[in-house]
Image 1: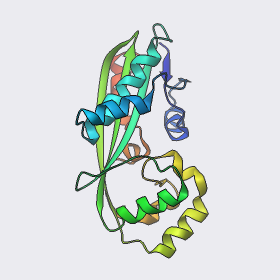
Image 2 (image 1 turned 135 degrees about the horizontal axis):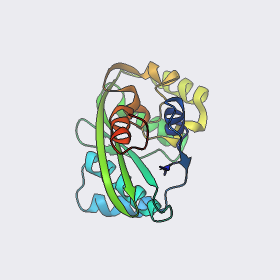
Image 3 (image 1 turned 45 degrees about the vertical axis):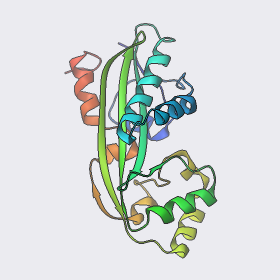
Length: 198
């Protein structure tokens, strides 16, 4: 059975490839910003926002891939006081986000949904709690200069598998959740559905 990842995320593609999961890649066929705006207006919290966006990406993309299992994903970030963050649009905004997260705990919600022919057949959301150490302005400037604009591709502005680990003093949750694809529940579903060997 064909598995399609409705995401351009290099991290998600690499996780699937490293796990030996054969898949195709396609850009999600939904208006993410319009969906997000509508969900927020309806009062969705960070977990529900991630799940609903993952479902919208999977459902819309599956209509272009008859019979395939289409995996939609999304990740949201909320500080412990409920303040939600979007991807930064500039390096200046990324520096501001890091200052707002410095010395505090936030949650990353990584959601996945699988659709087939326009119907959601599976969904899951996992949470990782991340506590940043207090960051100096000098450290933030050096970190952003070293990592560059690739940080703008992810909410939070860090790659935990690289230099981003230096931002944290405590992490609770799966490494895969932090990267944006909680692999173990996904593998369990794919085995049950017969997409991969059991």
